[in-house]
Image (cartoon, rainbow, N blue to C red; front, side, top):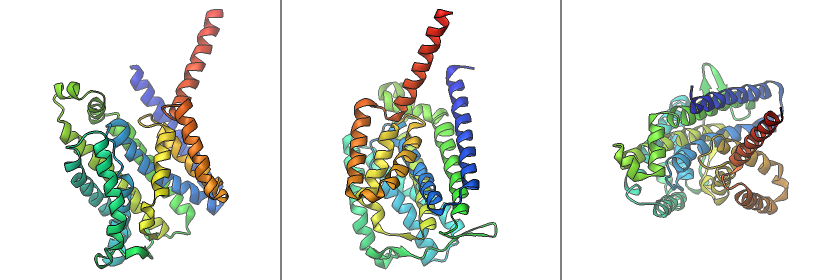
Amino acid sequence: MNHSHKRTGRDLVVLLVAVALLGLVGVFVGDSYFLHVLILCFVWVIVVAAWDLVMGYAGILSFAQLALFAIGSYASAMMSINHGVAPVLAIPAAAVLTGLAGALIAWPSMRLRGEYIALFTFALHLSLPTLLEQGRDLGTGGARGLIGVPPLELGGFVLRSNDKTGWYFLMLGVAALVVYVVYFTIIGGRWGKAFVALRDSEPFARSLGINMRRSQVLIFSVSALVTGLGGAFYAQYVGVITPRVLGNEFFLMVLIMLSVGGIGKYPGAIMGVFIITIGNELMRDLGQFRLLLLGVLVVAVMLWLPNGIADLRANLLRLVGRKRSVSAARD
């Protein structure tokens, strides 16, 4: 077994242990607010993992993630409210529709490079709130948004917004599955190696017979589908969806999660979600100073940990290894 397989096995064990511990939290902690914060963590884990797939491992500088999240949220809510589709069907359907939207966005944008892709996708993000506000006739609810999304029914159980325990275990399971699929199945598989090769050296990837544009459209579409799934679950959980989800605060929060955690450095991005989401809630009473402190945190991390808190993990492992080597030399 080579070092890469050992690392993958170790990371998988860590993931399973983390899921088990979080499961125990859901069993023994009955505080609704605390469970609500962790449910939001699980939702953002889905979004950040999908964004890390595109930006961290495929090297595509996309800022369309929150727009795709909104598309998934609105698609699920519109199907449930306007067309009477059962939420259990609306959620996967919204994810597929978001994946198709991602393909439509990726096809023209992948003709561009670097910062031009960022500008193209960010322009989409900026234009979508206006489209949603002006789309009342299409069923978006206009500036007011969509209120009263029907509760999710699973196997005879009705999950309403106030059923924190039920939603907690559902979103824990979905988030764990997404992390496994994104980081262990996709990135750890043949396609993941192709995406990393394209990110690191396009000429080398082409020499291996990798079709650059087709691979980029594929990875963007998969990321969009996963993000749409997170958006659909979010709409069903909160029961309300408005254009505010595309506001600057949401966008910056998710970007900070990814940046602080470590772009393309598993499990840094996932850890970043929990640190920023929980930290943001703890500082909620500070008002505008909360954003200032988050900004200071980002600057500090960028200065001392350029690859995010993933660097902290690597530094600790290096320090432990150095101490062991010194100890072995003395013996």
